[in-house]
Image (cartoon, rainbow, N blue to C red):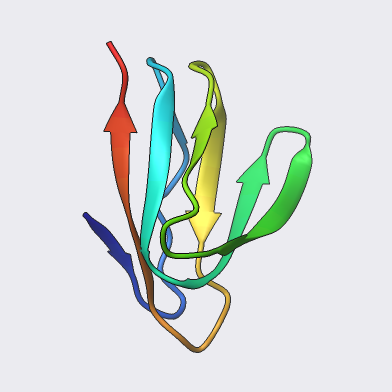
Length: 74
């Protein structure tokens, strides 16, 4: 499980496999990509998936912690 306190970030990384993100603590996630950035509300129980190859940095720009489990698919 990944916990993100206020101001924390993953650092730039690339996913080599397709993956699913399962939020365990709701929050607001900001992320950067080579094409810019965006944000997403994390809702407990509302998982989402992404294809392999995505390179990004996840940032918590809020005052609250959020958390999720990330599952890579082989």
